[in-house]
Image (tube, rainbow, N blue to C red; front, side, top):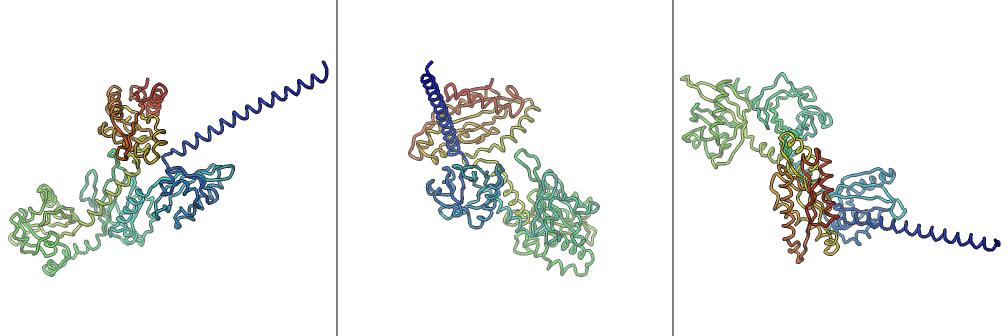
Length: 568
C-alpha cells in the first residue's frame, strides 16, 4: 500500500478520535450543568434561608434569605455581609466564619442577631460549611429565624431572675441545670459550683420534714449548708414539668428562706408576755378560731391579707374561718392533720378574699386550749400569692418554649423532631395495646409551577392554607407534621389501613373542592399525591413505616398523581 494512503488513514482516525472525545466532553458538560441547575433549584426552594458568604460579600441568597432580611434578592446580593449582621454580634460571626474556612468539611454553627432592611433586629440560628463558589473559598450558610423562641427564653429568664425566692431548674434526673441570682446570694455558692450536682446533695437528709406530696408537687422543710457552712432553714417547693406525653421532663424548685419565719416561731414560744402587742403589730397575719370555724381574734395584717377593711368586719363573718376556704374539704384535711400532730408548719392553703379572688398563704397552726379548756386554733399566715403566681408564669413560659421548639412556624404543624419521638412512643403504646395506627405521606403535585407563577410568598401562603384544609379533616389525637418543602406527614393513632385510606380520600376530595389564595385575588387549584402505611400490618418500626409510605406516594407520582396509594 502506498505510504500516502497509510498516512491519510491515520489522519482520519485521529479526526474520528477527536470527534468522539469532543462529544464525550460536551455530554459531561451538559450533565454537570444540569446537576448544578438542579442543586440551585433545591436551594432556591429550600424552606430555610440560604446564603453564600465570600470575602464579606453575599454572591448568592435564596428567596427565604431575602425575606428574612427584608431585601429584594438583588439588594441583598449587593450588600456587604458586615452591614446585615448586627454590630453587636459581627465579631462572633466573623470568628465562626474564619473557623469554618480553616476547617474545611467541618460544620459550624452559632446564634446571633441580624439587622433587617427596616432596622429591626432578629435572632437567627446559623449552620455553615466551607465550600467552593466559582472556584474560590466561600461559606454556605443555613439560617433559621429563632426570634420568637429567643423572646420566650428572655421572658423566662426575666421572670426567673425577678423572684426574690431561690430558684432551681432540674433535669429529669434531678441534676441542677440552672439557678437564679437570689439562690446565689442566699447560699454564697457560684452558679458553676451548683450546676451539675444533684439537688439532694445540698441538704441534710436527717432534718427533712414533709408537708405535702402529690404527683406534681412536693413540699418539705430541711436545713441547707451554705458555702460558709452556715445552716439555712429552707422550704423546698418542687413542681414537676411534664412533656406532651405526660412524662416528667424536669422539675422547678422554689426555695424559701425560713430563717425569719423560724425566728418568729421561736419568739412566739418564748415571749408570751409580749404576745398581744406583737399580735396587733405583726407583719404576718395572725388569728385564733374555734374548731367550728368561729373567729375569736384576728390581727390587722390578717384582715388586710384577706381584703377586709377592719378586724371587726372579719369577726362578724357568720361562718368564721370556714367561710374563707374555697373547698370545705381542704379545711377538714388541715383539722385532721392538726389534731394528729398538734402543730403544722408552713402549711400551704388557698383562701378566699372578700372580693372572691383567691390568695395563697403559708400558715403555721398550733392547737391550744382557752381558759375553759376548750380547744382552739392559733395561726400565723404569710402571704405566698406573689410566689404562686410567679410559679404559674414560669410554668406557662416553659410550656410555651417547649411547644415552640416542636412546631413548624409556617403551617403550625409539628416538626420532624417531634415526629420521630412521637412515632417511637406510639409504636410502643400500640404494640402493648394491640391497637393499629396509620401514617400518610403527602406531596403537593406540580407545586413548583404554583411558586414559579405566583411567587414564593404566595407559595408559602398556599401551603399554610393546605395545612388548614388538612386540620379541618383530621381529629385529635391525629396530627400533622411539616416534613420539608411541600411534603406533609399525617399520623393517625387508632386508624387501620381502611380507615386511614378513607380519611386520605376525604382530604384529597376537600382539596379538589377548595380554591386557594382567594384572599389574595388569585384562584389556585392544588392537589396532592398520598402514600399510606399501617402498623403493624406493613412494618414493625418507625423506619419501615416511613419508607413504605414514601414509596407508596412515589408510585402514585409515577403513575398519575393526585391519588391515594397504599403500601404492599
